[in-house]
Length: 410
Image (tube, rainbow, N blue to C red; front, side):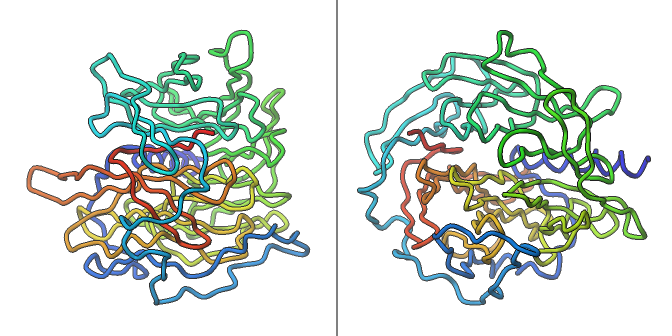
């Protein structure tokens, strides 16, 4: 039991660490990681833009072997103009100074300030729910939920990001670590009479929603299962068996159609910060690996509105101080190898950060921000991140204003 609790705590600590600025402990990079002087963002396959086929006996594993050739984007220079004339809506992002939220047209330009923070704590980790009705943003150790016109709806003391229901019904799940060391998943409902009240609570180290939003999928100790929204009752769907490799750490769960996927690994196979994790699928209740081992976890895993494509941020330690974060996209049934934007090689002695990643309403473009940093005796020195839009299918990439954590507004 102690091993399972420790693995849950490690899982939570990995997620919390990924939410802030990069602070990388000294560890040995896994053998699959290219040295920092040679790291490039590579595209290894073309996404199938058609509707994914229904799995029959089992999900299709990645069909293409990773390529050693860099992608050929529509424009190799990310600052070169691409055709964004068909894009609609606006993009909100955190101002470089952190005390305002700015807005630009999805086609670029028309910069406006839509929110100014009056307090002393800068804004961070801007997010949006799948229905594009609610904004989330952090101010220090507090999560704030706003309507799109910045009316505050909820304020909660937490460092964990909301896990939104796919139904656009105002429900979200939130991880909670109690003073007694217990780990729970709480569900809130913004459309209830008292949105600050917890609708239901269940034990869990990680959570996602079933595809239809009818229940939660929860990592609970050595099991992954379904948690009821009525009473929190847990029904196991699969076993994560403890053996000589130890208990399991899970940092992301995904429900797609009738399949449950997760990203994780066993404790004794992980490095000090989790290096050695991979994607898995539950087949007849047993985990089967879908990807190669490598990296120290993923963050911001999210499906587009059509639930056909999955975007997530891979984290790789490349030195004692440096982390390379890479945005990846692939079919939600893992029937394709991952695509990544061609941002060029990462320079020697430089780390790369991806600040957020959200889909546009039509689910074919992403917006994200890329920043870099170097290491000094006094600590990391961060460059100002820049907002991008990217089409994974044709590799069109366009750089916009400077700022972080962009979200796409209808």
